[in-house]
Length: 297
Ligand SMILES: [Zn+2]
Image (tube, rainbow, N blue to C red):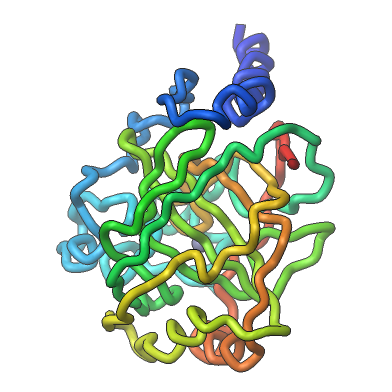
């Protein structure tokens, strides 16, 4: 029975992430009937929606963490990093809550080579400029706030909570990293996450990224960054990769519907260097694809 169910799981995954349903859903925003039970709010890491990242950072040690605090674990979580005894190969051992980092079979990031052609461009952005803050959480620079609008993916609404950066890129294409990657983190009403990844490379000017790097605190802390037009950091959605995966930081919860754009954005070398001066390396190595499909449109 287990074996049979495993096969069904793959079929269900493909159905959820787009084949056959994408077209019908492109024209509307009706709730997606095929919510994937495995990745729903029953996940132990799902947290009350109202619990924002700031609260999480002020929470005492040992208190139940919100999913946002897991995305941006600062002083409140088990100590982890990108090298040595607290590096990615040991995340699963640092805390019981992190065991998916070691034993999960749908981990992120992955190499996106060889996607299966499918119609999955069923994504619409309804982001709204907002007065947001820029946070240095000790692991990355993160821009966050309220009322940033939402995205619809497969007709399902995911609110935009924050975006943050990695260097080098976490996802690779044909085995190659880009210099940086930005992750736009969205969450739906049930606590499932949808992250849109955009690869970044030097060779142009990006005023939004320049502003963020100018305002970003050099030490852990938060600063006002003024009105943020999130769209300033995204390329045209003319090609995407789609797969089911995880957070790329502890606890590596497998609750993330990933969309990575195939077109990178251009930023200035100076701003990339400014980020790398603060975080020389904050990318998790690529993980096995295992029995997943990467869909490409
Ligand atoms: Zn990230």
